[in-house]
Amino acid sequence: MIREVQARLGCTADGKAGPQTWAAIHGHIFGTSRAVPAVGVDARSATNIATLHPKVQDYARALIQAAAQQGIAIKVISGTRTYDEQNALYAKGRTKPGSVVTNARAGYSNHNFGIAFDIGVFDARGSYLEESPLYKVVGSLGAGLGLEWGGNWKTIEDQPHFQLRPTWASLLSVAHMLAELRFRQGVGKDVFA
Ligand SMILES: [Zn+2]
Image 1 (spheres, helix red, strand yellow):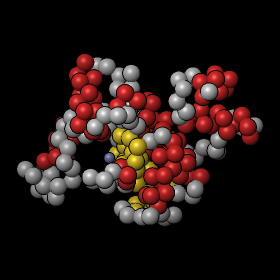
Image 2: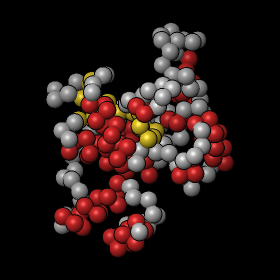
Image 3: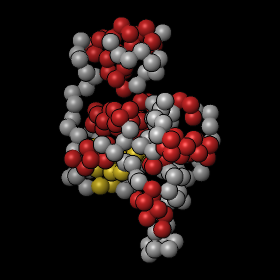
């Protein structure tokens, strides 16, 4: 059914209703070309969004719009990390000063494959809120768009974290998904193919 709707609305008929399909459905019913008046994406978010897989870029922008619709200002504060950047982060609190910030070394974080990003909630004065109940609101907005939200993880709850799980990984454990992601990166295969 969703494929027929997508074809009628001129969207890519992939059978998966992402942000573009929902916006097209909304626009069709309410007679506007887009679901919400677009808020500008700030420079910091734009820089981080540019590091993501093109498919995930759409979701990140859609999440900023969805949060803005609820009066919540968010920024994408982290996107894709290279293996070197991941290892530098992993060294913190281990072989380098500071406290431990991640349990993932290079190739073992979803952030290494363009599918994950972290958001920050900002108050009306533009100050970053490290903790806020609004993270849960944004979490449910992201889940509504089809993103996986780190706040739902049982092992390490990670409220700023969102990722787009590839369809092929829907039934895979995190370890198996990461192994396939590393393989695909090694052979240059698209992570969503
Ligand atoms: Zn993250």
